Image 1 (cartoon, rainbow, N blue to C red):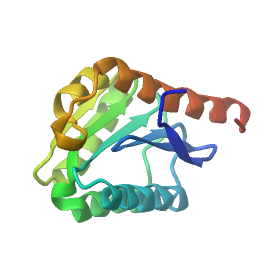
Image 2: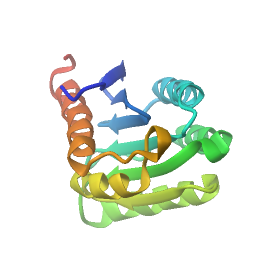
Image 3: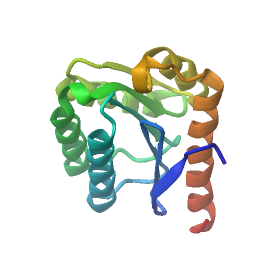
Length: 170
């Protein structure tokens, strides 16, 4: 287990964790409003405990359905509420082809609606997120995290989410 990864939500549709000043959310099925509200509450709690800002990473499994409108609206509202407390936001929508591309386009629209003064990037692979995050996310006093430690934390959350999908339990 990566040092400091703490899971706060583990459901069949999603798995949420914090790692340092990151909030990592791995969605493996259509997210419900209830589970998305748990994510939003934890995200705002993390912001209050990290005076140097928070980094958000959302990982969406290939072939996951698009979230319902009320879930998308909650995500946009939560991001807007953060203002300058959000350092950066990486969205990984896994897969290739038309549907994955369409999902990344929808996410880009959500980001545009929520956008403040933080960097965002939407990509198709978890492996692409870690180097980008290492460049844009920082800890206390501006300290940077290594690509490797970010990759390890992201993969830990992703694997745990996959286990939930396959078995329904950890």
